[in-house]
Image (tube, rainbow, N blue to C red; front, side, top):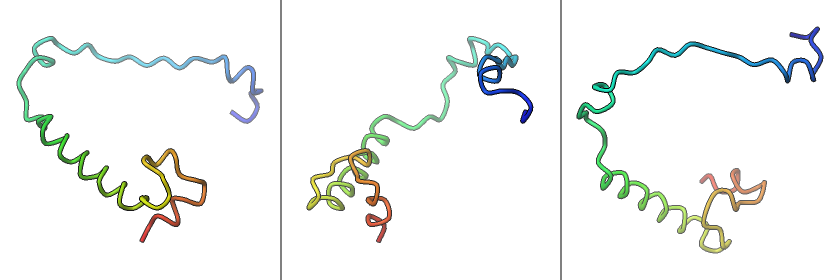
Length: 74
């Protein structure tokens, strides 16, 4: 790959074959996590995040300054 120039490399498409998924496999009942369980876990994580950054006015990780991740770890 070192001998291929950037613009030429950018124009190369990669194609892979993916086998078809049968409708029955998509619609079968499985042991997926319930939405309520996921919601509870997300609310707990948000609560921890609010507590961690309450003095900085940060609500989401994306709002942290570049030094944020290291200073946020206890």
